[in-house]
Length: 358
Image 1 (cartoon, rainbow, N blue to C red):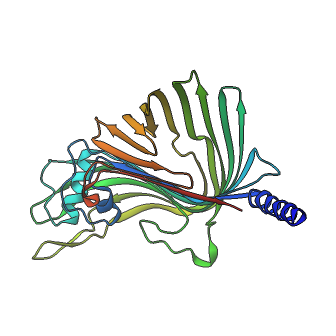
Image 2: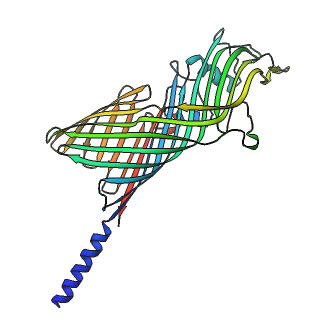
């Protein structure tokens, strides 16, 4: 009987030991913000309202994938990741002009609209190696990533346009665009004239320092170092004027710009904006109070909040964004909005992770 009990205990111990050898985590992080129009309306290209007066910025950056850890190498995790990045810089006159043109409203709010557009869209798949280590009161995580770039569109437009009551557009624009697929002039990639994939790298860093039993400071740096490059991709540079606009007896019905420029293949190299988060946590009793400064590209956020148990509430007074987080033993999630109706939100933050071991 004792022998059987010992064998059973040994078997259970063996199973338990085996079960803890592997850990797999699935995760998603997404952060979108714009001061132009609601995020989802911009994504659907269906603006229900005019842009804000200070409209000049928009971004959406997402990562999703999974991380694997084996207890044979307890300080390392291997990642498979996909990412989607969009960055937009513009000005209020351009945003208003776009909204008016899309809704058949005459561009007569200004005598002349100054046009400024700088848009970058990129999608990549990647592999990462993460190293985690505790040095006394310091926890460190360093992650190096290799990226296979499979979509790029970088567009720049500058110039001026004006409108008439009959919806006719007049003006001159300078246009430049790099692209792997979609492009403004719908240029086809005949027989693979240009390359549609590229390469990149990035480095992420997290540092946590436990100053005392009640105080902790930390820094999280995403894309601290990064670079992407694609050789001989599609390229167009042109001067555009509206002398080719077609106007019928009803109003403006099509846009046939006159172009003068070049279409060719050209290499392109770029960096994505860094994401920097600096935080201070202070614990008293069951509560942890948070102060966080966060910068994504050129946009800064400041958050104050409190945690109790598995729940956290963070508030960004300047941008009127509230984040709710839940952190469990196996599942974590986060949602942040500046409006109860997501269709009206200028800021949307989402996060999810779930892990299991065997």
